Picture 1 (cartoon, rainbow, N blue to C red):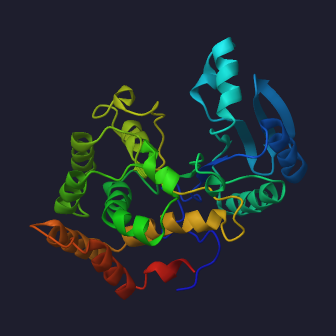
Picture 2 (cartoon, rainbow, N blue to C red):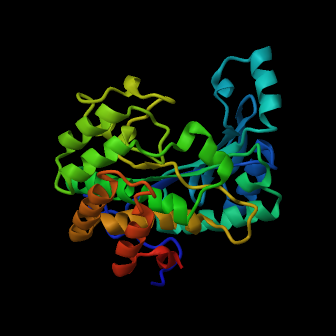
Length: 324
């Protein structure tokens, strides 16, 4: 199945009939915050300026405002010797991060071009060093607040996560770090048992029962805390502050910015597949049944779920070549 770059999602508009937007967080090394800010201002317009300490921003660019900073918790602390030491040491292993405003598809295409420019300027991705573990996070706006538009993408990702990690593996360093841990097997089992017609309340209760960590390939806490703060309090999140918002937080993708065969679209395609599966109720039902069958019982030679999942997706025209 051939598809265009930054392919529109199956449900491209939100509940108000406006195009859905996606915020992007990009982690990489090789360039300072100041240098990145000036490259961005030259390429995208706007004004580059220092915000605080080593933090920079670009305001008024073609794709809105950009926040640029070393991705380390110490940057938010008051100026101190500890902070300065952390920033100096951090540059050896901790990425600079660019955070965008929520962008429509056209903005994502412009961001993709900008990423290509950063590559030519010397940006380094997660594969450059065994010490690197850089990611590219996508924050797609939800299509609506209905259970269908929240629970089904969650279920789709949970069911194909193991297959996705095997067929389109993330860098080994990121796999070893705790920031993108796979969903617990019991969570997937309960979601598969509930199926695609589960209520939002059922999905939240199930998720909360098995994990309150933000450090998964798909972090659902921002959505759950936004829509039902009575069921999950942001303070309960583990592994970082939860910022409630009506957007998925897809943390799985790599940032291999120095690889000429990699692009923003390479990682967008992962999410496109999740949502494409999510709108096909029969496919979700089948994946749920087959996952429960594959994972049940004793399998001395492995449960073969990756192979089974791949076969099901191939038959639906959504196998590994669907990204091409």
